[in-house]
Image 1 (tube, rainbow, N blue to C red):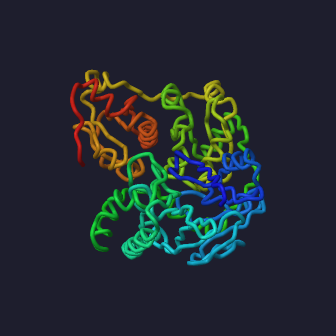
Image 2 (tube, rainbow, N blue to C red):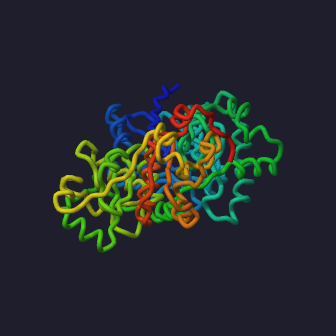
Image 3 (cartoon, rainbow, N blue to C red):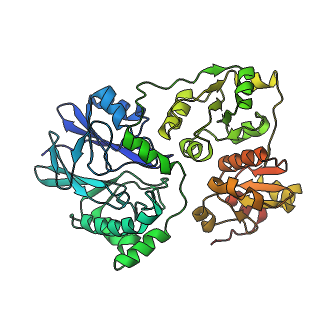
Length: 457
């Protein structure tokens, strides 16, 4: 019996897990790798493993796949479902197919739903079930959304998801379940931070497995879905054709302040990756605030225009590699460059503008107390607790709702301040000069106001 050495590599920002498995003879299998492979490669090196196989459960919509990177740089064999044919070399896997990896065998289970071609992979040791990689099918407390292909496929795929989950329920209760999507992923609607589970636990506790019948399942699944970034609608096709192989870390050329100004006048967009307080203290007019943190890739993909050049502004202590790889994960392969010397270089020749960052006490009792409050968190977050007077407009849809905003002073809030500052930068670009950002979130307001939050939408 082989010893299981399975390493989950978690992307907290995108909410996904890539799995690195030692399959014997110093070789490894990687399941659902993202394009930023730095941690996966580091884990493999630490274990003395060569990545021999790269398997995909489905065509990913939420990130650029890393299988081609592994194929070209490591010589890995790509394993992928036959449906939704990829336009690059890969080994086709169909329902019931098995592949001898060495110490383990991989067996494919057709589980359409999250996508039409979705496969789960049973991991076997001499016929004994070791666990199952479930991708975007069965997840902790939920199942993968089915509305990423096309509107006319949403319900049929939800029905397929029902049958796929019940197929997985035929496995023994003690079978470990290793999903790709999890907490923080827009492909998942479940709360909580756990990323792995078992068949028995999901059978007993997953709300989607407690409803009776296919129709009730479809209603429950579709009723749990929130909005998702619009870049999901284009990355699947990029992954099907085969992403450009980057090989090494993309460059981030240094640009003078004059050159940045020239490129901005020609249509380039400025993405300021500094934290909200730094952005508030001074930033390039018209720039978009997206603070560098785990969720940077998601909000860059959602808010930035993929058809316009991007110039980065960062602080010296922010790692440019983190910025370029986060950008590449959502399809921004080649950033135009960064402001050489940061904001100090800009202010030596041009004026910076500031933003208003206020604390909860000032929102409650200061001049901003009479301002309209906009809560730009996801609707599901808003429903769990919000300021009574706050109106819900999700950040991802803010641009489409600008004309609906009230005139006069605005206060924008989220959970901490990062997304709110992104919203404030969008409002500034639209011409608003009367916007403040709450430094904190609803809980801070509740403490300052001595009032409870409201629930519901």
